[in-house]
Every structure is written in C-alpha cells, then in structure tokens.
Image 1 (cartoon, rainbow, N blue to C red):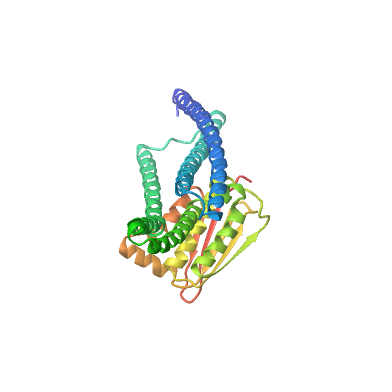
Image 2 (image 1 turned 90 degrees about the vertical axis):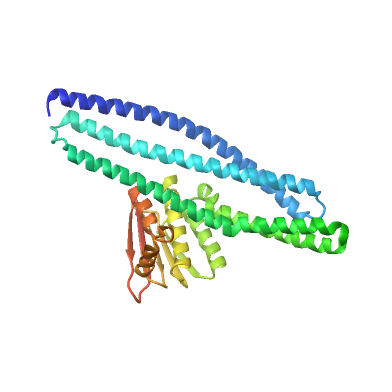
Length: 351
C-alpha cells in the first residue's frame, strides 16, 4: 500500500471513529432520558399495584367506576413500562454494538499507524464481506420475526382469549340486570372470578415477557423464581443449580440473553420434547458465563428434523443458535438416542 493510500484510509477511519463517538454520546443521552422515564413508570406501577391490592381487598364495596379507572390505569402503566423497557434495552444494545465497533476501529488505527500493513482484500473479498453482512442482517430479522410470532401466539392463547371471555360474561350480566336480578348477582360473582383469573393471566404473561425482578435482583434469583413458576404450571420436575454468588450482576444485555435462552429451552423441552424431567445449571462466576439445560423425552435431532420438514423454524432451535452467535456466544447440542438431551450456552462477560 502506498503512503498516500494509507493516509487516506487512516483519515477515513478516524472520521468514522469520530462519528461513532458522536453517535455514542447521543445514545447515552437517550439512555439517560429513557432510564429516568423507566424509573418514573416503575414508581407509578408500584402505586397502581398498591391501589389494585386495595380494590381486591374491598372488591364488593368499591364503586364500579373506580375499579374501571384503576384497572385502565394499570394496563396503561404496564404497557408504557414494557414499551419504555424495550426501548431502553434496544438503546443499550445499540450502545454495546457501537462500542464494540469503535474499539475495533481504534485497534485498526493503532495497527495502521504502528506496524506494516498486510495487503488489502481484493474486490472479490469485499464482495464476500458484503454478502456476509447481508446474511447477518437477514438472520437478525428472521430471529426477531420468530420471537414476534411466539409472543403473538402466547398472547392469543392466553390473555387475549381470557379478555374475550371476560367481555362476553359482562354482556350476559348487563342483559340479566332487568330480567333476573338474582341470576345477575350469580353472574357477577362469576365475572369477579373471571376478572381475577384474567388479571393473573395478564401478570403471568408480563412475567413471561419481561420479569421486573431481572432488573432489580439479577439473573440468578429471577431464574430460580422462573423455574418455580414453570414447575407449578407445567407439572414437570425441574431443578436448577446455581454456581457461585447469586447476587453477582452481569451486563444487562448478557442477563437478558441468558434468561431468554433458558426460557426458550424450557418451553422447547415442554412443548417439543414432551419432557418429564429438566435440570438447569447456571454459572455466572466464570467468563464466559455458562448455562446448560438437560432434559429427557424426544431427541433434539428428531425434533429438528420434524421442524425442518415442516419449514417452521419458530418451533426449532436454529433461531436461538443464531441469536447466541450474533452476540459472540457459543451454543452446543448433545442429542443421543436413549440419553437425555443437553444444550450448553456460553456468553462472554465484561469480567
């Protein structure tokens, strides 16, 4: 490479590095604003939850309109809280990716200015890099779409169906008020039970979507709680072994990725493998952080072959593997006929 070409390249890289630094400052400003808004909504959520508990304790004496106002406020607050949290997570992920890219550029600049340069890739190599970049983008989009499909299915089968039944029962009560007050009273009791059940299902869905304790307490306590809930609801013997100090915190995006991965693997074992026994091991003391899930039932090879035949990756593990690899992690599958399946995950941490 000629001196002029080298200087031009260094100049372009420096300009790009400065733009990344500027963008990082902008993102940090947005993160600070989002965090402030998120904390405000968290406080509001606590207040609304307290109000709802009071209503539940005095459900028979609280005016109907007051109940409606509080429940509407609770739904609105939860929705805004989830939206704020998703936005904050996205900003944090963007920041992490930009920081990673900025560090790579910085290392490259140091190399360019300090040692002799290897030959630049040919046009053909550049085309390969472009193709790889496009493939990565496609994988991200497909992974996001699979996650949206899963959430939409859960919403339809859970809270949405419950709310539909709730509306039908309310209509029955309205029609019975004038014709049969006694029957209307019975239906109101049924409606009250349905409301409590629906509210609980919504809370369960929110916990599935994003448990608040993941931010407050960290990965280990959240997974222990999640396993307890999973065991109660599925009836599957599920155990978790946490290695090291449970209070240790990892980077937010790492905790989220591990939690989502283990959540998905538990669902995979329940829905696809028809497991009756599941064992989890979570080690957050090492770098990389490690987690493994061992479960009996149908083999992974058998399940993935069926998934490939049906061409519905939503029910397979390929999307999970892609998400793990995209954040620099590793995932390994062990599937042998007659032996339990095993999935191992490793994600790099800051220290």
